[in-house]
Image 1 (tube, helix red, strand yellow):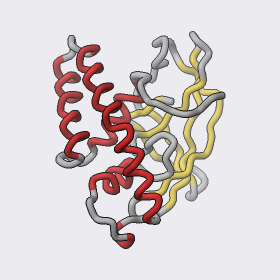
Image 2 (image 1 turned 90 degrees about the horizontal axis):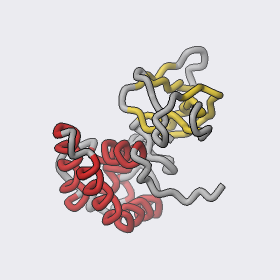
Image 3 (image 1 turned 180 degrees about the horizontal axis):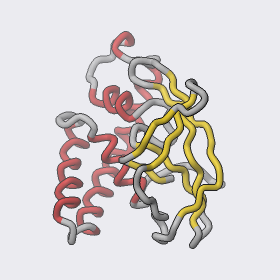
Length: 179
């Protein structure tokens, strides 16, 4: 999967579906070769307001290594049903009232537990990325600005969106897929 920052959400023929298309040229995160569009798939997304969206994301095959990637916008947290804004607001909130969330309380507790269990991994992965991108001062400073957000879970809005993009595109996003 590839998380893109600069994209279009277009509802061409069917107003129920939003088509996701990158505005920039994307290369394979594994081998840096070109990607070819091989199809698309539907991806559901729930906003913080509770509104449901159906996104059509492109499936891309690398011409070099042959791996298949999905072109996901940065409003998506991989393997989560809720948007990155909703997950961020749930994680940063300290209330346990059900009326504050767009989801059930048990879902909010699971999201908070998910982040708590992976917090140290996220922080250490960002620290390793600062060493990897040591030559690019602007990128390194942007990564360094995310590290305090993980510990305090507050500050700048949109920090989870940036965190996910850096970790997924660098190949450091943990997942449980086995096949």
